[in-house]
Length: 336
Image (cartoon, rainbow, N blue to C red):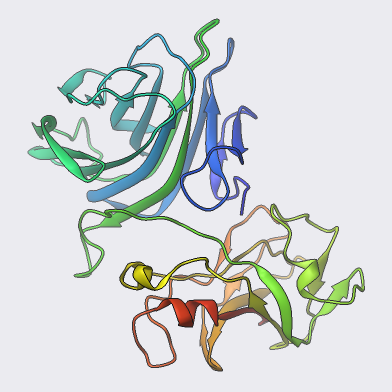
């Protein structure tokens, strides 16, 4: 949605980059400052002792080649447990909690190229780290040993960092972030290739909510990227009234059918009366509706509201295909 909602960002130098992206129409950009390091971290839904992290990486600015300039790290609270560090014309390096290199790869990372980076993290006294670049492993880019520096036996957030280094003009972007834990018997290993695309409202189906301002079409009040707050929006005051919208086409082709793994609806929604109001987001596939959970709203748009993931087309149920995706509708319903 081209904002940093859901992330905790240290300073304004972490930006939405609409000129460089791996999929969709934007990435999260980091540019080195002469005075202040920049960081952005994302708190996971739950802590995990073992997980697989994926992100697209694009190094766009020159750097001095120091592996301390830029990295992705896994944390528990405010404690760093380990990191994977990168620099222009250098291989990836894995570092422990103290920043000491424990493994070094062989592939030199070049500028202006998207790389898909994956890392397997297992926190334990006898744990391990493994890394893939573009789906391929490097024998030297792995570590087995103590990955638990203290009492923390799991991690609950991932953090991206870029240093403050005088006149250096290092910069990079990240995109298509994914994370699997090892529970549940599915989505419990390497994330693999993955791209995130956006389909946004472009027509009305059901219009029970109230528009502000009163434009001709409801979808025109909720299709801004990034969202425009209280400039245009729809609002409900009656329980179980809803809006439902047609969506733009996915742009996928038939050959992509086996690669549609999940769908979710996301919005920027708030409670205007500070009463703990709730709403839900839902999908409709060939008139078969699948609801997300009731979400308790805050009085700010600064919260990511989500339907959760729909792993199957509810009209069946069956695996998603391009035709079902392109015919999909999405909506919002007041709950309390």
